[in-house]
Structure formats: C-alpha cells, structure tokens
Amino acid sequence: MDRTLVRLALRSKVPARGLAVKGWVRTRRDLKGVTFLELNDGSCLGNLQVLVEHGSGPASALGDAGTGAAVSVFGDLVDSPGKGQKWELRARDLEVLGPADQGSYPLQKKRHSDEFLRGIAHLRPRTNKYGALLRIRSELSLLIHDFFRERGFFYVHTPIITGSDCEGAGELFRVTSLDLAGPILDHEADFFGRPAYLTVSGQLEAELLAMSLGRVYTFGPTFRAENSNTPRHAAEFWMVEPEMAFADLEEDIDLAEELVKALAVGVMDRCPEDLELFARFVEPGLMARLEAVAGEPFARLPYAEAVLVLERSGAEFEYPVGFGLDLQTEHERYLCETVFKRPLAVFDYPKEIKPFYMRLNSDQRTVAAMDVLVPGVGELIGGSQREERLEVLESRFADQGLDAGRYWWYLDTRRFGSAPHAGFGLGFERLLMLVTGISNIRDVIAFPRTPRNLEF
RNA sequence: UCCCCGGUAGCUCAAUCGGCAGAGCGGGUGGCUGUUAACCACUAGGUUCGCGGUUCAAGUCCGUGCCGGGGAGCCA
Image (cartoon, rainbow, N blue to C red; front, side):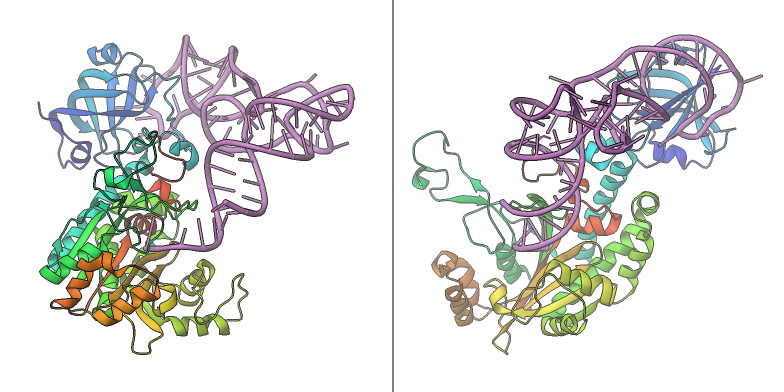
C-alpha cells in the first residue's frame, strides 16, 4: 500500500477511498463518541484531521496514544462537516507504530520558547516553525543551484581539510589523527605529515577552478573556531562561494544582487505557506521586506562615501568613524536600516583592513572589496575582485607578513594565464535569517555548533 | 573574550519592604452529540541552578561557580 503524503491529501480536489497516511500525532481531541487526531508527516505545514469513531477497530487500536505518537491510518478522505478544514480522513484501520508517553514527551500543544527548543534539537523539527524552516532551507538550497546552473556556473567541491593556516578568515579548527594524550605533538608523524585544519573558506581553491572552468561555485560547510557568542555566528555554517574568471568588482556586485533577488523571488514562489507562518508569528514585516529585497535596486556606495555619510549624519556612535577604520556593526546597521532602508553594497575598502587576495585599486590605498549588508541581519555577503597581478600579490603577501612560498600553487595561477576574476561568499544561514525573520542563527540550523554546544 | 540581564512545577511566568512557594498551560482521572491550541470538573506535581555567607527568618541580600539570553569584537 503506497503511503499518501498529507500534503497531497490536503490538496485533493475530490474525495478518495482507501488512502494510507502515516505521520505523527500533533494533537488529539476526545469527545463523547469520536476522537480527532491532527496528523502531520512533515510533507507540509498543515495537518490532516483523522476521525476515529469510538467502538470501532481503529479506536481500540489507537488506545490512549496521543501527542507525539507515530501512527499509520488507512481510511477514506471525505468532506469534513466541521469548520477549519476541507477534508478529513475517516479511519477504517489504524496502527500505532510508535507511542509517545504523554507525561514525558516534551513537545506540548502550545508555544515553546526558542531557548527551550534548542535544548531538544532532536525533537524540535517536529514543530511547525522548525519544520517550515527546514523545508524553506531545502528549497533555498535548490534555488541556489538553479540560479547558478542557469548562468553557466559549474558546481565544484573544494576540500574540507586544508593545510593553509592563514586564509585570513579567523581561527581554524585543528585536524589530527594523533593521540592528544600522548607525548608532544609531532606534525611529521601526523596523518598528513604537516598541520591540518578544517577549511574556513573554499575560495582559494575555487579561484583555481574558476581559472579553468570559467564560472564555478561551491556550496558547502565551513568552520570557524572563533569564540563568537552572538546570534549571527556559528562554528559550522554553510557558505555559497561563486568565483568568476574575466569579471571585475562591479560584475561581482551585480551577481550578488541578482542572486539575492532571485532567491527572494524564488522562496516567495515556492514556499508561500511556510513563509506565511514566519510572517504571522516571527516577523510581522517579513513579506514587505522580501518584496523590497526582490524589487528595489540595492544601494551601492564606496567605503569613502559611507564614511562621509556617517560623519555628516550627526548620529551618535559608540565607535569612531574615519577613513582607515573598519565599519562597526552599529555603522553598518545605521547605513542599511536608517539611511537606505534596503540592501546595501559598500565597496573599495582601505587595503589595510582587508586580506591579501583583494585587488589593489589604482588609488593604491583601497582594494576592490565589497560587503552586502541587509536589514536585520547585517553582513550577508563579503567578496572582492581578486588580485591577478603577480608582483602586486607578492608585495601584498609581504605587507601582511605571510609566507608566499606556501601558496606557490595560488601564485602559479598568476604566473600562467592570469586574468581578472572576482567572487564572494554568502552566508547561507544568514540568508535564511533574512528570509524567515528568525533572529538567531542557532534556530536556522537543525543542529547548530556554537561554543560549548555539541550535544546533537 | 569583554559588558549587561536572567536561572522558581514538564513548559511559560508571578511571588510587595527579607516573613506559610502560586497561576495558566501541559500530565492523570471523570464528564461532554463533530472538535479546531475544544470545553467542564477533580487531581498529582517543587533540592526556587550549585556551593559558601549575612539574618530569628533568604526565591528575595552578599560572594563564587555553572548554564542561558542580549550587546560588542571576529566574520558569512
């Protein structure tokens, strides 16, 4: 007997006899002669109402099974005489696949706090909110692939384990097969014969592939060992990193804007029901924000002008503003949420505050870097045109005290057939925060990794 | 890592000036002619985060540790 998804049953145009539906009981209502079950199988936000008549076989099979139990129901999809749903499944046969003790099952038919649900991450995907989130997460992933494929990008896989210890993006996790309880660590004796780390970015390898295939992107997990305790940082997160040969910074920003817009449009098109939940219960202005992201052109301004705007704003800031100083979170938020009220790309940052691989501009003091800031989330994208000139790149290595010799393969792409190229990294969880209005990154990943959190 | 706030029943929270630890929801039991977070009645349920201190008396005040949240830095 094929199982019918709740999603399909709810969308049925006609009554149907002999459907088999399997799922988890969200709630149970007992009356004098009948019991109602709300059955959810994860296929969509909605539940299918199941009718069990007392004194019947299904009723005795159901017993006292209630919220949380897994059940299999065979029955007829009929018009529901009650209000609130078009269809209900009149049970002819029923089996409790897995009961759930009512006294100890943690999920109740009431709203739970995010903090509580984080403590039961193994069960929270059974709630409306996290089910909706995970379905949206899935669709957005597929939309990303659609977007790049339509534009001639190839999906490439870059290493998770890296030997580069200074990719310019924060602290790294060490990877070793050595016995840490043993004597002094000897890198020579370790698996790779040298120190190894979890990658903080696939960018350097993606550049090599872009200089071969033209347009590529990665979409995979990334690791940062920073002791960051904020709602916007995780130790393990997913990043989308496109890299384009024969492209400059402006084209890079163009791509970033097209991508974010396409994803906003796509998610509104494919996930209206799940988005509605977030618009109603999580972020009241969500749909207007998504429409704005999708419809209005992003603001773009050079870092130097951003500094002038901030200096002339008259606003009080905790941290100083000035050319050469990095923009603080308060400055980025002010620009994005108060001045422009829409996504904003800031570009051409002072070279001193950016990594070695960003292309030096002709003014000799800024690099072709760009950050895309979005309301409510802050930095969504960071990217740049890459330095393709060998001599300039070598001097940038020297300026930042890095050993160019260890990046001989990276420099080789500048020795042999070098060409302008550009790319960026988009934080996938931050995108989900933008799309759903969820304000903590720990709630847009099923099993988040943050400092001192590795339970599930 | 720094700053601020918090930790009371399974969950969400209340408890006046330091004076008998409470409610709603959830659970259990019973009722109810089709419910919609059903409804009605009854009922059980507590190391007030841990340790130490002040006091006749501490959920409440002091010290300290742990955990959580928010802000900052780092960044995606």
